[in-house]
Length: 260
Image 1 (tube, rainbow, N blue to C red):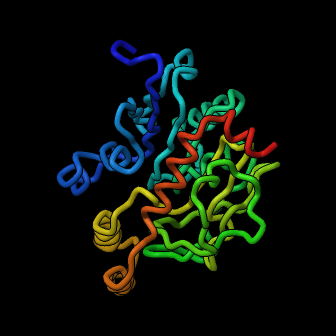
Image 2: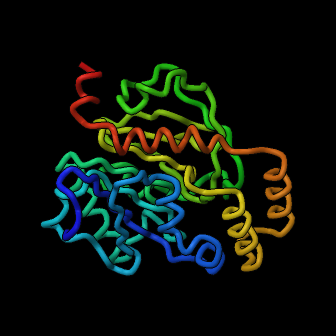
């Protein structure tokens, strides 16, 4: 790409949802939400609206240091053409050893593409703040190395009604909650899935809750209860963002050296 330096890191956001009016008005679109959360100075970030059938050029994949798959109102286990194309792309990225971070729908579709199982959640909607527990024996993950002490529990914003039921062969579950058995998984040190939304702020979630209530997707009483709980607690957003950024930006050779 013209104007991109040789050493400049380049990332692709695979956008699986369309901008809401609220996010467009307040943040200028979800692309800005993700850049505000994950981008550092000097990096190039590009967005591909995969939900609209726009994908990176297969011949250009090697130029990216990492990929992020966003959340989506669509089902990761569905057979929409763009979802199937996305699954094919993710298998290609895995075979190339590319860093791929999946969030919510992204976490689920990443799991499906690589041989895991995704279904409607038994417990129904998970909305609001959720306390996530790290497994006791954390598998070696190089991107945890400079986080010093990793808390046994971390709170994250959740907004989903589907869940990963089985992780792909060889994948390790890193975190779970009382509602969802797979909150975070890691595969071959270059694949990371997170069920919650590290990038969300509480106002984005509140707007989603209002829209779900207005379309009768959730009951208004439930919506008000979730919003009232949001007023008295905060997600561990800074720590989640550090996990994500460490994962995306740690050189693979350093990760492998730390594991040997």
